[in-house]
Image (cartoon, rainbow, N blue to C red):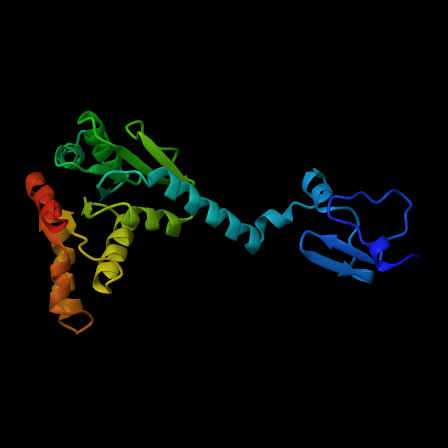
Length: 261
């Protein structure tokens, strides 16, 4: 058959039809010999539009998608000015007092020199983005692929849509100097407690968290104090990780003070 050098075929070379399979094959940096030799080339397999598509649902491929989401998020947000992430319910009705508070908060944050980051959806998120845009600030929306939500709200100027919640959460924290949390549901609570955990464990420092709406958050604060802390599941000082207010100016003052602005 000839020596091994003659049998060696580089990646990209085409084996003529009817040719005897070589004993040695290089596929990029990988060497295959004998029965491990594969038909065709890497380029042929890449460009072949036919065949099994199940590979796009495998874990190695998901890792690549996750990596690409981090790259896209970092690239889109790397040059943001100082920003505050604002959370709240997608179900907050437009024109309601909570919605108008979100608009006022978005405006006040921009006037204090911050960009505004939200989840990009409707309701309270739309309100904060609307306020930021009306104040001619930077209005950012970090969306998530969900079966019951459609796209980013029209007040978002920079938008990134994510498949994976944990990638999106990283962006909320990495590119913000603090959180303001409007009344919201399970998603809002998830984001709130993740932020509290990051501060409590020292994963992030100098990260103010403001809960807006004393009537809404009062029951949660009472439960934390009277049950969680009282039973030793958290310490009294953990209640100092956040502030509660009904005043837009105070909310902005609190995040501004804690980030040294």
